[in-house]
Image 1 (cartoon, rainbow over the protein chains, first blue to last red):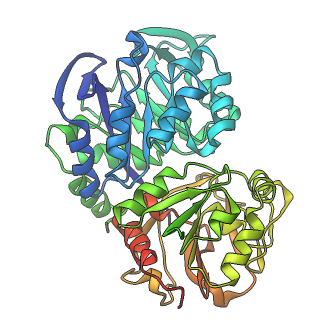
Image 2 (cartoon, each protein chain N blue to C red):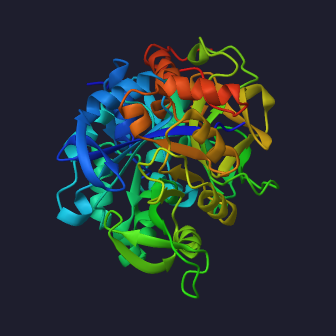
Length: 259
Length: 208
């Protein structure tokens, strides 16, 4: 039986680990390579690197960080932030990323998803979406809207529609990041996650809001997520990855326990 | 001059992750796309991610399919991974492709009835039904490997199956015969459990 995955997201700015709270006011909290290795040794299932400055400041992608991590971490490595072209994706793959996350650029030019899928395979293209809760309207019937550029720009696109469109265009996996929940540590956006997960046939990674172990259990069950993304709760040392997995195991969730 | 280990390069995915993992276990592997160079390798890794159709075309175009068959027939320790395993069988439903035929059997797409199960089968899954094999030494029931695939191998001969895994249905995840061993999972992405397999391969003489 397939295990539910615990994935750590390392937001990187200028090559250093940062964690955003509602996408503003980021603060440095360490070296991404060191953290990556630490989590890997503690049973992490997958790593996501996100260059949080790339979209708005147009910085180059941190190929060097990726390369150094790939040399010592032997679990799937997913990288995103500022991926605009197939060349960006293939460069990151050569540096050692398994999967490539596309976000803002795919919203602005959806063909990017199919182009990447063609070049590196569907299973390696992850569509990451930042979602904001809004009043239900004709334009946004689900009440969840896609925003881009680190949460700054609402796009008038329904998140549920976009998830299905992303799957149709060739994404192999979705990251559903709730801007409302991000950084609050009050738990994932369960309704949003479940609605998206049940409307696509590709894996869904829940993101934003994890603060306690039960939040992971909730999103992997009620939220119907295939994987739970964690950040600050492990970055600040409040919880260890192994502790989260032991907890989930105790709640009856299938997780990988031997590593 | 011989090559300690060759990773077969046929435009089927990112081979550097395999190369890095080999390096981690002390096996210096070269990425090789030339059949004559491949014939000079002491051991061969046949990985691959992508579609069976394109992979077979690329293998034939480069003359690598014939070289692989020859190498395996003469006893070179060889490890197939993921698509490498799949195209070792005779036929794949993916792109309706006739494949290498090193093992009898075919590759089928997952047809799942449970709507909650996603395709591809992506993530960590445990292995069971483990038969003793030098490359699986130390593996215990419940140990997990990392998978990414939408098609699964269905070998005709149960005797070549060294481990199975389950995704609604049981499927073979490790096949072996003589000096050839192949896994549906990705040892290079499976943490220490995966590195252990690669380390065993680095010292394997090709007997089981």
